[in-house]
Image (cartoon, rainbow over all chains, first blue to last red; front, side, top):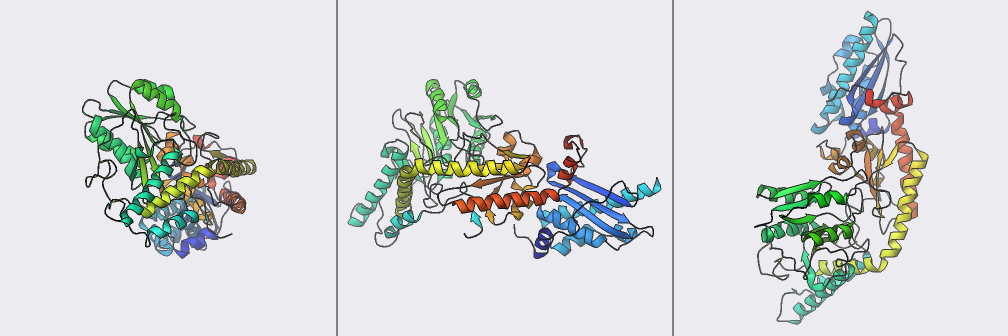
Length: 127
Length: 403
């Protein structure tokens, strides 16, 4: 399969690989996908007291498009407020990376991971 | 050393330059149709074709008259199964095959099942080998044929063809074997192994693509109805003009394969075992798919736990290998062969096949090992699954959101 230059760039030089302390109350963690499907994404956000995403990290088990989608997602998240982050759609990621139709599910997974991380953060704050 | 390094010898092999050289005169200087009886060009072509036939027969201990040329192993497999079914199928409508067979065998059987045949698909053990007792138990009075491949294209496992042949002969059942991967690589004697019909490929043994053969036993006689109608060439079994240059190349490739078989097997076995053992010694959770020793010298099929196959393929793009997962073809289905070994989907997703062969160098082997080691470690650092395993999480207890 021929990948776009942007996918190759994110795949070869992934941004923000790593982990944040999931026990920290300022950190929200989203883990989506399943090994049997060939994709597992873990996406974490660190949110400031003013509700701005200061840092984002990911680890992904998946194809090149899945890795690129999560890498791009972390870039998009940084500096956004939680409300702005909620607005990120899978189509934004798919368009930016020029994903082929069979890889659209990778961008869907990234959107799911963003939402799961935000939900996790909010539930921590609510508790 | 040039990159990418070709490591997909089970898919196809480069045509040996000696084969190319042997073929060369038959494109222009010697243009005859081997079926032309009225002039020297035809006679010359016929002689070349018959020399090739003899060279191919010699590799498997057959009589040259028992070799029928085809367009390749896919046609041979179709012909062996459908052609035999047409001949013997009036009263015997049961065929036994194995789930790890090549798609063309399985699909030929599926085609016959739509025509009223009953097909038994035997499973394999964890190492890819067939349990012979299961074969014996599956035999019936109306069993027409047993079709079991000699060496598997994905995992390289070599079935005990001699034992299977003996079982079939005793039961009075015809025995077909797909030898596309084993012909010219390991010793075969169709008489010792009681094979009735055998599929052979040229481009897996450094011959040209587009040509193959079917061995069809004469005594006791194996009957195969033609599936291609026409001028009645090849003893009436396969019509169509024989492609002289391709057959000359195929014959030369067979001659070289037989002459170099022992030395090549030894060299490739050492390379194969070096790749497997070095990788397994350096990084944990790497599993060899298929039996460790009853396998083709040129086949390595490894699963790298916690790393996804397609991203590994991308990372090792300097190595031309094949993925055990069919993800790249957009079907997102892991290999049915690996599934048959009992591999879970996630392990089947993380497997790659490295095929080495005649032109693989020690330098390429070392480069392949280094490339794989470095990238598996890099991808594991990026893998949430690997992180969880390092934290002591048992992944089988995790509730995943299947998508």
